[in-house]
Image (cartoon, rainbow, N blue to C red):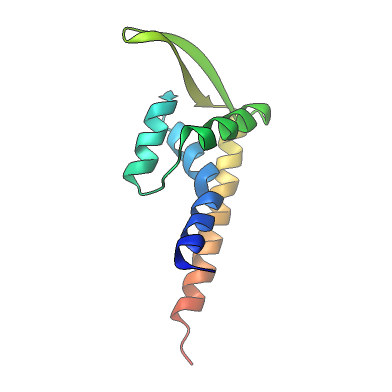
Length: 110
């Protein structure tokens, strides 16, 4: 596996966690999610994000509302549901455990 492929696979596995974390801060528009992911060097395109948001909606982890925009058509804003907050907490616990495990392996010397 190349380094680029490794980086891509790691990022793919973390996108849901990162998207839920961004949404947990309050109502958020899709473009804002993409911009924050890009700033964090997690490159995501709309073709990846929209199916994820639809899956999160189907799982009752997020819901959305339409709001009028002065810059064009109404915009869809996402928020976390109670179930979404619980799921995010579980993902956070998993992340912390995984981070500890990987760091333990990295720091282990022969």
